Length: 169
Image 1: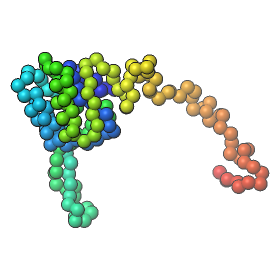
Image 2: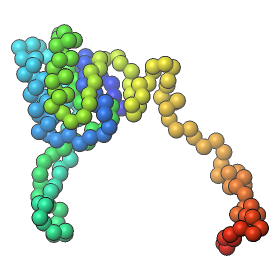
Image 3: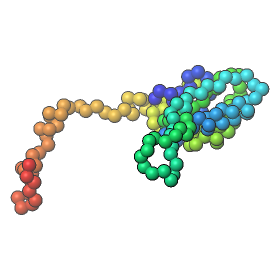
Image 4: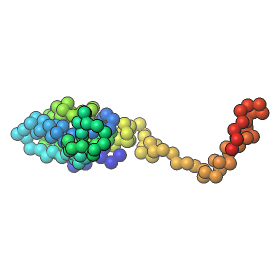
């Protein structure tokens, strides 16, 4: 649930799709789009992800082996429901919504507009809505120790039919 709520700004752009890899070039274009749309206004833009993973490629006609390949680009792995951009300033909500819509069109995947104070998200489920808590979404812990579970499993030789296939152990 970390990184799914607006922390520093007033509004945010959150990924709504599955996990993706976003290149540094795509992030830069989206940031320029937001700045261009909000030109002349006082605001502070925060980028919550960093393109810190190098991608190395070798050509299509190159045979297997012979090393990793040459450096191609920087990318960022973005998990589902992560905040990508946050914005702070005395801006009208509709203007920020429009700027984030334009930036989301430049990025791969689906995005949603969020405000400060919106419910956190675990996976694709919003926590806090309809009485759902984070504890409800976690996997239940095993209630009984493994020894008791092993005692309940019937032995393979006793449960096999008399004239059916026999499994030797």
